[in-house]
Amino acid sequence: MIVPDTKWLPDLKDSGRSKYKALAEAIRVAVTTGQLEPDAKLPPVRELAYQIGVTPGTVARAYSLLTDEGRLRAEVGRGTFVAGQVRKAPAQDVPLINTVDETFADFRSSRVPDVGQGRLIDAALMEVASSHRRRHINYPTEETDLEARNAVVGWLSNVDLGAFDANDIVLANGAQNATIMALFSILSGPAPVILTEDLAYPGVRHAARLLRAKVVGVAMDDEGIIPEALAQAYREHGGQVLVTSAEVHSPTTTQTSLRRKKTIAEVARSLNLMIIEDDCYGPLHTDIPNYRAILPEQSFYVSSLTKSVTGALRFGFVVAPAGQGAVVRQVAQSAHYGVSQPITDLCTKLITSGVAAKVRIDVTAAVTARVRYAVNKLGSWDIKWREEAPFLWLSLPLGWRASSFVAACEQRGVLVKAADEFALPSGRAPNAVRLAIGTCVSDTLFQEAVQTIDDLLSTPQGRIDN
Image (cartoon, rainbow, N blue to C red; front, side, top):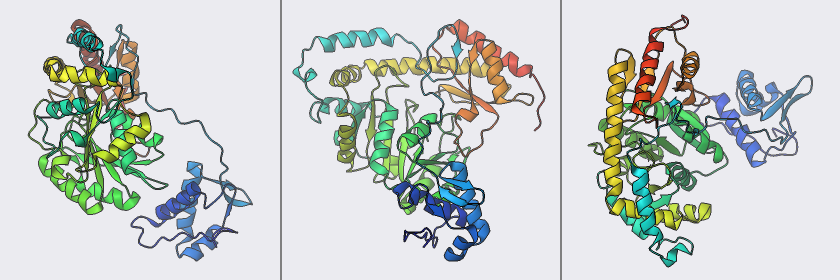
């Protein structure tokens, strides 16, 4: 027995990962499920090593890792114990929403440019308010949101998702909520694992923490996630789902090629790995099919009106894998009953009337104009950009560290986001910043801010090593 009064013993055979990581994960799961209770004493390193057929160094590394995590505690002269159930305050993470202050050029959050959609939404809201529909009294249902789901089918006519209809669509309160619903329908077991790009939108971390899941980064190159790295991450950590932004990756603007997508889909098929593709920044037109078109039985598509029309309405949606719409719909009902019916009807009107499409065209034009201006000013620096992506990825020149550059920008009234805000807990961040050009300030203030960034890049405050 590994611990007095329990028959639990870790089985490390065919673990497919490093022995110390496999042992750490086995102890982690046992603690999570209650097989190893708080304050239970673990055997000495050499004793456990002998029982399970590994080296003492393997056990020592596993104990050390779990002690650092706070799951075990080491007491000098007494041994190693399961940590008591003391709840720690959750670690503070990057906020997903920043307060709007028009006196600053805020390049941190990607906001929709103001192209007059506020008044158009107000007008549509007045029409919905005067409809006096009785369904604005009762709970939303599958029947009352059918109009909206059909409207979303039309909205997605420019996206290659394979065969789908309104029954495959589940409405959500924005894309973050849509992603969480998809994850809820996938994740199971005491220690679920989410795989994602090694630089990822912070919302993935927030979702993982909410669902008590471990998030593991997968290496990328200029074509997107590296298939071999995905397979390796799965071998080392396991995993049930890959969450990816393949069309417009935030923060790097990378677009995953069709060839790469097909290879990743084959890896996912072989590992029985589900895929959630977040396409909130997707352009008006693309020739590259979504994962759902390539691997329809294992892929979710997530998007919203947030980045193309307005973030105020919090209207998003999931296109579930073929035949799984009812599963995600049940998750939505259990979580929040459904999206508010007046909001659903308002967004239906915006889409079916053509207002949303017009706003999206105007937003795209505004984004393109600002991207072109920023690229013309900052083009001598190491930047990655695409006209349809509302942000630029700026690798800092020698002499600047991301932290000091962010601080210097703030002193000049410009707010930018450092790369480490996109890095996963176990990952490393490059010396770079993301510039979201949708900041809701005047063109004059925007242009002055870009000039400030260019001036700072030219005058680094201190030399640093390569």
